[in-house]
Image (cartoon, rainbow, N blue to C red; front, top):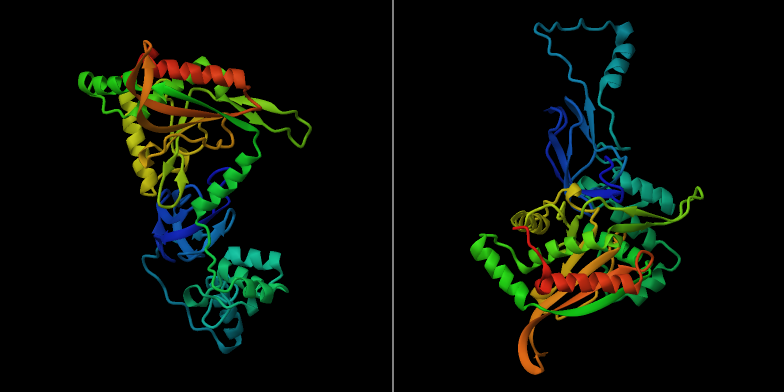
Length: 399
C-alpha cells in the first residue's frame, strides 16, 4: 500500500480490478481502497503483468503491505519450440526448475486446506502473541482477518469469562474508517487549549444580498457561500487566523507557527459514513460563482464517497453549519492544524430594538472557536467583530 497522506496508515480493499496474469499499463487502476479519509484508487506504477494479487475484498491493509505484484512482461515467441523431454537422470533438475519458476504464494499456506491470513492480521497476531494456527478464519475460503485475530485474543484473555458475563445482551460494533478518523482527530482537538466566542448578527442585508446576486449577477450562491467569501476576507484582515501552532520537536527545535499561503476554507459535511471536511482552495481569489460551484461539487463528492485525498486537509479555517438541522447555535471543535473554526446556526426571526422601537429581524448566530496558543480573546473578538460587520453591510462581493 502506498503512502496516501501523512495521517493515512491503513485502508480497506473494497474492489479489485485486475487478476493474476493480466497486462496493465502505467496508471491503470488496480484496486480501490477505503481509507479513513476517502475512497482512493491504487494505480499501476509502471507497465507490466500482474504476477499475483495479494489481497482480497474486505482486507484491511497497512502502508507498505504488498497489494499486487507486478512482473515485467515476457515477449511472446513467434515460433515457440517445445523443450526436449528430460532424461531420467535430469528429472530432479527439471522438477526444481519448474518449482522455481512457479508463482510463489504471497501468504503462508495459500493452497486449499492451508493457513491463509491477511497481512494486517499477521502483524496483529505477532503483537498480541496469538498463534494463527489456533484462529478460526471467517474471510473468503477461510482466510484469517484482523477481526478474527482480535476476537480470538479477547476470547482467550484471562478476563474473557468475566467480560463475557458483563456484556450479556450487549453488541459490540466496529467503527468505520471515517468514524475512527473523527474519533482520533477530536481526541487530539481536546488537547488543544481553545475557547469560543459567540455573536448574533442581523442577517437582513445578507439575505437581501443573496437574492440580489442571484437576480443581478446570476450567481446561484447560498448563504454559506457568502459566509465562506466573507470569512476569507476576515482572514486576510486578521492574519493570525492563518497561523497553525507547531509543537516543539524532539531535536530541540522550539514551538513555531506555520503560516498558510492564501485562504483555503474547509466545509464540514455530514455523510452516511461520518463527518468529512473537503476544502475549497484559494477562496481569497475565487469569485463567488466559482466558490458556489466548487462547494456543490465537493459536497456531492463527499456524500457519494468520491472525494480525492488532495481535496481534504490543509485548510486555513473551517466552516461548520447545522442550520439545516434546526440548530440555533453551537460551538464546534477545532480541526488540529487550524487556528479557528466558525460554527453557523440557522436564521431565526427575533424581536430586536431598532431606533428605540421593537422590530422583527432575521438573526444569525455565529460562534468562532479559536486556538488560544495562536490568538487571545481580544484578537479573536476583533476578528469575529470584523466578520459581523462584513455580513451586516460592509462586504464587497466578488461575484
